[in-house]
Image (cartoon, rainbow, N blue to C red):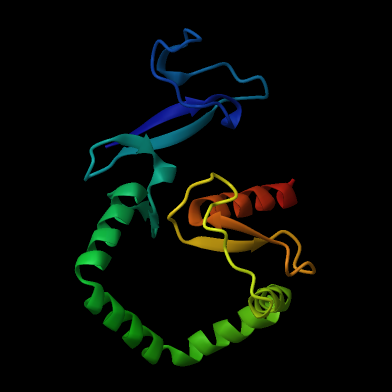
Length: 176
């Protein structure tokens, strides 16, 4: 069953009825124009009512499970049946080897600076410190991040979550 809610100005957070602003059903008057309507859907697995953006598109519809439930299921399958997943990946790469080779060549051509910076840092023996520079956690695998590829030895070591967050921030800065 699909539901819809209004988000004022397209950017207001969802609120529970009777929230701190006294507005019912998460609605607020829009300062910039008519409210934006965001459809909602119930996840078939966790039964939570979520914005449609939390479901992956499937053709002209959306998946029945939310992205979070789907991700958890895929992680479980990958862990419990690791060898079958690896074999499926090997078969896919074998069957589509020409397409994979084209994609790899295009990526390498587009990312020469990134590859050169990574190789230069590796040759210089730059090692991760063991602590994420973003959140300070230890015990996680760290990924090297270059703010400027011309400064190959200036590496910021981040956990996967902080690295992804940093790239989202950079993308947002570029887009305005």
